[in-house]
Length: 69
Image (cartoon, rainbow, N blue to C red):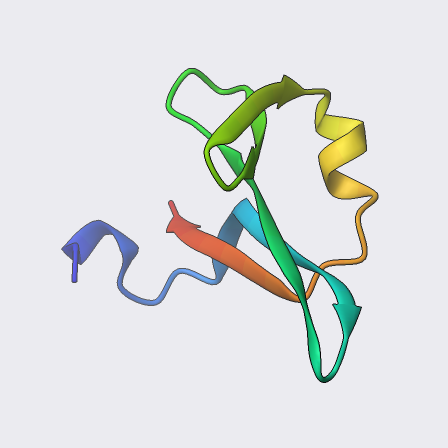
């Protein structure tokens, strides 16, 4: 662990997954904030840039956070 982050309680959302379908089947897509600070929608072999507001209004299945200073 980075010594600068030890004890930090600050986190920043950088990705989320969304499940479309039912408990017995469906499809997952991901939204992620890349190093260029833009949000993208990843869906199998296709990806596209999306507005941050569109990514953040999804009904997420999993959220991914990164610890920050």
